Length: 84
Image 1 (spheres, rainbow, N blue to C red):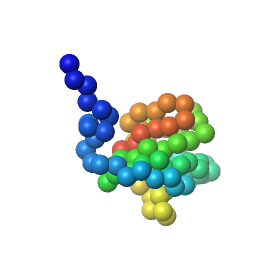
Image 2 (tube, helix red, strand yellow):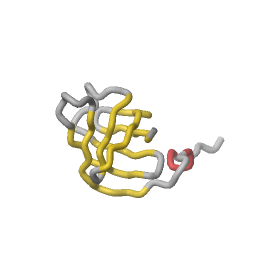
Image 3 (cartoon, one colour):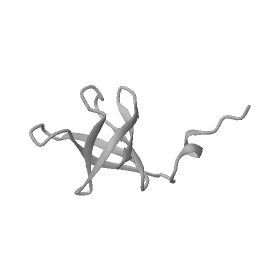
Image 4 (cartoon, rainbow, N blue to C red):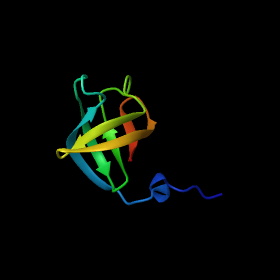
């Protein structure tokens, strides 16, 4: 049985990067700084201090552009997101 690598299951190729971004949970909550590790037209990988308290749906600001997104997977310090 052959297992596909995670990248083989992706809808679009991702570009590796190391860039600061911000997670916006609500208008009243402070923005959470995060690191953008890779990105495609449909998804991205974010690195954070902790994923604890970050909801399933939120906005992320990348290069001054706000993207609505949802968490696809997460562990203690990283999460894969899909843009909506």
